[in-house]
Length: 118
View 1 (tube, rainbow, N blue to C red):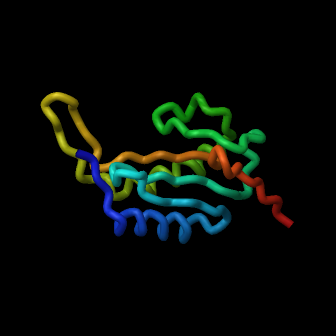
View 2: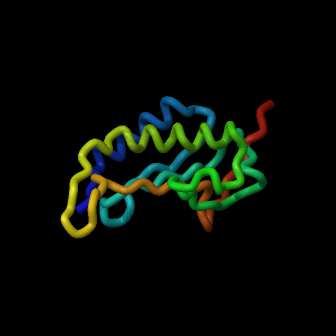
């Protein structure tokens, strides 16, 4: 069963904040500790005017994002995946990750804010 500890979520949070200081994030465990939820709250990207979008990490090419925005999202995913080395095989379900990663631009009740550089 997928599981991520609060200590691992903290490591992901601190790494993202350290490597990407130009943006603000919310990084927390999902409700049952089977995944990490990463919300991009604000940053220097326009994201084509998008204020809320759940990112499908398996089909990034289908999202309406520029190359620099895609690089930014991929960097977030790489940081979050850095602790994923403990996936395991299940006879019924195949490979099961040690935890799931959910990335979104904004939230339904707190939209993404494009920060304009001065």
